[in-house]
Image (cartoon, rainbow, N blue to C red; front, side):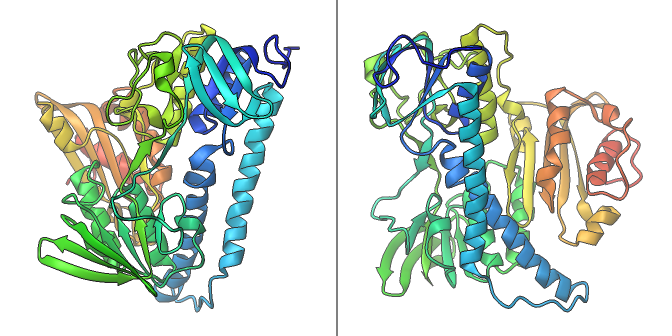
Length: 484
């Protein structure tokens, strides 16, 4: 049985270990668990709660709330479309948040339990580097730790702020505290049309709020395929959300009953009043207090800590590795990418062969209504690289299950053009109900350089939404029943 006592020092005075992980979010705890499973002694320093932003303030609580929003939307659909005489009396905010918090608590207990069973020593306190292989943790059971194999930086990110806008957790909120602000507002202005802003706009609209969504770029989800942005905006507007693109906030005043903001739009200045202003303009890496210079490291000017070797996620200082939101692009700053990065680093430190993380095949999902999901290159990215492409799109309503759901949506496939034929699949882009559960197939197709003719040999169940994905590939392979 492996000795779970870390190093040669006492349990409350630091000591020597194999691996020190700073940060207990998805990237940090996945690194710690995998390293421990490979027989390494691990110290995990976390100043807040293990699980990080994703578990406590982001992915998990927000998707719990979005599921509740889906149930609310279902009541309206049942009544208006299917003749089911259902009514929504009210939303019990306390009961809703209690269910959300229970889900988070059970997940948190699960992570804590996994770490304990794996023999990972969790030290609860702020950590700072004191050298390339040494870390000091300010905690009753902390002290100076040294690592024989290496140190892993996994300190995550926080919401990006805007000058002059000070979040108060009630009227002006960030994505970290939006779900925990008191009660349901009657109106919300969401600043930022990326995945986080779109999800929060969708949630609040489902809960009956009047919602205005403001994005500085020319379209929502500006990093996604233009077809995705177009169908998403159409779906949100159909639900009654006011969408303002090419628009920027020029002023904001907190009032007794909310906030009044001035927005510069292509049509001119517009003043919007709302009970709550939600700032979702991105996230920035957290490195404050880490003392990177003590280990000979520095950020890249944007706050990221870049690896010198992406195949190992190792910095220019040997033995210091980076995972999660501290990584610059092409790492997408997504929790599921952080898991993979943690596995890679742990296996690297243990001397176990491990494939580099292929960030180009990490799926991207927005859990709004409608949902979006994509993997690989957009059409514009492929053409910008000088690639000849073949593109096929299919509305979800072209298949029977899409008609059943009645929410619209589209499947778009971008593939390489090879002479008169079609080559490898470069990207797949989905909009519509449940597409977050449909993207896994396409991730494999892009990662394995599959061609539409390969996919065309396989049968999709009927009737399903995924049948639309199969039909899109069939058409590209020249075998489609519905030519588009």
